[in-house]
Image (cartoon, rainbow, N blue to C red; front, side, top):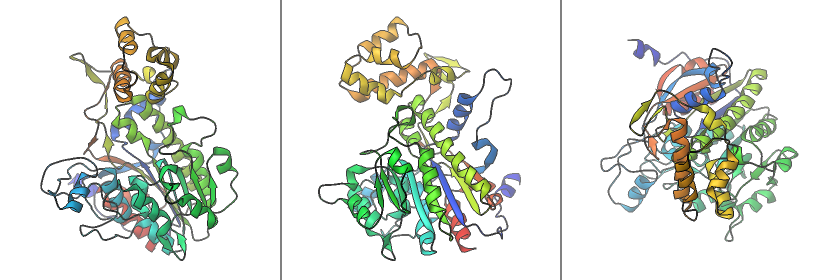
Length: 450
């Protein structure tokens, strides 16, 4: 009875909401929040310090995609199967495309599909609806801007891997003669500045400020801006140089520009590479991206606390990697997690391996990155790592860090667990409970209609 009551529909909030900011921590399952809380804990105090997320917790989301009979597979395989007429795929564990489609449209779709139905017909999105109402719109990510989560809000495509067509739609899908997104920040030069078509230049030609550095972004004085800060995904927070903006800085700029519209705005902010680190079972990268994401959420909350017509929503599309805080190492179950090991690293394992491929010495790069004392056996593994094989070398490094920190993983893919839901703003009470992930779109559409 208690569980039933927790998911009852709440009475709609009567006060209008002018601005909506949706934060998505891609891959950020519940264990990531627990690990991050332990990361920021001050060992000098008796209590574990809380995160910004903890103060606005309201519930959880179920993440199931639309299912089909057949074998279970990953990401876009089910969309490809539908396109080719071959065996349909069972989607029991969602990918980012299906989950983002649920957030963006309120409809279920198969893994790999972006805001299209079973007949490959476009489904209207929250971002498009906001634009039709005269609001400004923005998307801020650390992946390439045409990656699955942002793409679901502005593109309609059966196969999330069709980056050429998705990138084209960012410019070609228009309303009243302009692209749907006013502020677009992240990585992705590769498909936005192709030999066959320079979409970035097309944006610039219609008045968008085209920027590629932190200083240029911060000093931008145009109402519309396209920021491309990497060929594909941006560097993780721990590895960024001063020329690259943080997710928080991009969020701050986006809010400043979008909030000039008296009709309000819709903004999507994604901590994209929490997921990428999870796929690589990289706890250092994951915690780096959690810090980057939390700082961006703080920017949104700071704005909402001065603007009572702003609704903040924070969640994840799924969990990645099956992260566990505590693990079985060499057949022994450890009831602990050593955050000090994770915090000791100055760069991520990705960067470490990249540097080793230049210097030829993975052990030296590891020892520069941390003050952890290694056993002779661990030193031998790093010294003998096949440096030319990037992914094998990366696995050697991440396995070592996981063992030393007692970090566990069950997969390099996604898992089907429920994800946490957080909210701040005038209508937050309506999200209290456990919901299907389509609830977010239903909620945001309802805000736009009030």
